Image (cartoon, rainbow, N blue to C red; front, top):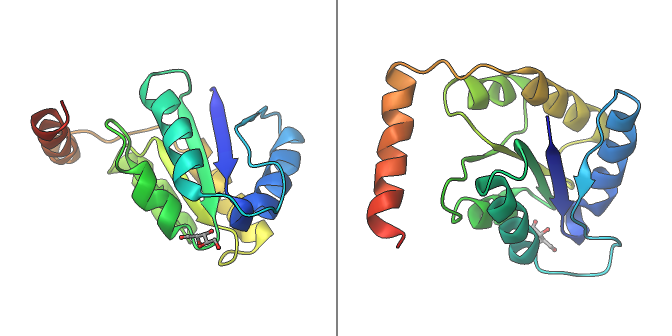
Length: 150
Ligand code: RB5
């Protein structure tokens, strides 16, 4: 599975922790920055990352800002992106099963590192989109995107 990770300054520390933690578990995330705690703008990181996920360069994306809110708002503007802001493991599992989320979002100032790692582990281990009625709903979102995004 090809996975990209990015954050703004508010998510930088957690991003570095997750890269190191998951390296030990056999993952090799592609890091799209940011590369320090110097202030940057989260839309720049969300949009670049999500465009590459939507284009199929990556199977999944991980985005982190301070709260997880700004970067998820920006991420969900990109056509084809279903970004799920998760603060618990149940949501991390359901966002794949029910929503076919291709990006998970975490809040570096909200969720502690070990819980964030467990949330991410849950998301990455969940491979199955259940389809059926859930697919109908996701398809309605896709149809709306087709209508409004030229
Ligand atoms: C940056 O200070 C902060 O506003 C940002 O990381 C994020 O929390 C926005 O939603």
